Each structure stands twice: as C-alpha cells, then as structure tokens.
Image (tube, rainbow, N blue to C red; front, side, top):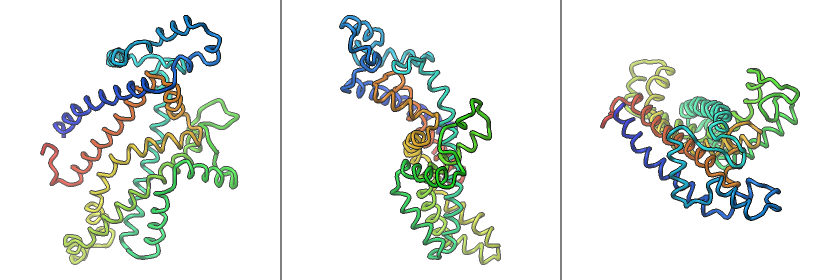
Length: 321
C-alpha cells in the first residue's frame, strides 16, 4: 500500500503543476481585466498611471510564466498570495470556507453510499419486484435531474410549503452564534439534495453487482449449506457485488465537487462556492489557482481511496503489483 501511495504521490506532482499552469494560461487569455475587477467603479475615473501602478502591484503586468513561477515558489513556502477581489490572504479565505464545504461533501457522500447500497441490495434480492422497478425508475430519472433544480424543489416543498426545515444559510436569521443544533438543521436539506443527486450511480452499481453475485457458484453454495438469507446477502453477495462500486468512488469526486458548488449557491451555504465564482469571473489568479489545486488534489485522493478500498475488499488485488 505504501509503495502504491508513493507512486500516486509522485504522479500527482506533474499533474498539479500542469493544472496550475493551465489556470494561469486560461486566466491570461481571458477577456476580463483583473485591474478593473479590483478597482470597481473607482477605476472609471482613475488615471492610466494609477491603473498601471495597480497592475504592477497585483503582478499582472508580468509575463505568464513569471506570474506562475512566482506564485508556485510562494505557494511551496506556504504563502498562497492575496486575493485581489476579496482583498484578503488566500489561505485565510480558503481556511474559513473549506471546512464547511468538506462537511457538506462528506455528509452527502455518506448519504449517497449508505442509502444507495441499502436500496441496491434490496432491489437485487427481488429483481423485477415492485421495489426494484420503483427505485430503478427513480434512479434513472434522478440521473438527468440537475442538482440546483433538486435544491430549488426541496426548498419549495420542505421550507416553504411544510416549513419543517430552513431554506438556507448556516444559522437562523435572528442568531449571531453558530451552534451544533442550528448547523445540523441547516445541513439537512443541502446534504440530502447533494447526496440524492449522487445516489443513482451507487444504487445501480450495487444492484447490478449484487444481482450478478447472487447467481455465482459461491453464493449458491452458501445457500445450499443452509446459511441464512441475511448472511448470504451481507456476508457473500454484498462483499462481491460492492467491488465495482468501490471503483466508482473516485470517479464521482469531480461530480461531487461540481454539485457541491451548485448546492452551496442555492442554499447559501458558506463554503467555497462563492469564492470560486468570484475568482473565476474576476480573474483572481492566486485564489483561482489555490481552489483549482484543492479540487485537483481531491480528485486524486478520491482515485487513491478507490484503489485502497478495492484492495482491502479483494485480497487477490496486490497493492504493489
């Protein structure tokens, strides 16, 4: 396992270098002017000399390679630079938001995996039954439903019509203190929406995997030996049927990140969504590069997690092979 993780870490280095350079290259080719975004309406009356000085202070007057190299060297020393739009250190902006985004993403991922696995096992046990038909139809429908649309629908039904859950934010409107109870209640809708948007793939993979495992000789032999149905399902069919689903975890991380950005925006969740949108539209080089590196690292970590879980679940797979 250590050797595999080491190889993946070495592979991640050039990937991250290429990704960060690509961010600066795309930003340099963008028609948006970071100086105008920084100055706002004050830039309309500023002299060209003042604008040139601001451009030099922001470092955007330097060549592309120079800007990228200076940012990379500073980042390796722990200095991610200053956000030209938010006018705060990038590390501070990311640090205060990444925790809330991670909480939302992890909770939603847990909902998708646990609920998708449970429904997949139940559907595979009675293939063609009413539960299988209903859940499979719902899963195919949800595959085509955008996360933001599900979020708006959830707000309308649970917050406006029933009034049982808050519509957004992190705390109640009249409260200026963040408490566990308020965070938990405000987390329910965005985590459920994001989790349900990811659920169809886990359900379909588990359903197919368990259904195939139930027709295999080892599972038939377990039933012939008189083992109970729960033991056959959970101890034999599920373990074999979940192997394809484990490889799905890494591939769903990019979709999870994209969905999280949309859900955070719909529910006004204080994560990195707002910062990402501002960084992209305002060509905020340091903030945009830092957020892109985080997203890329999350995808690479998800792929590594899939391989590790697959190896742990199937002893025939060698970590160092």
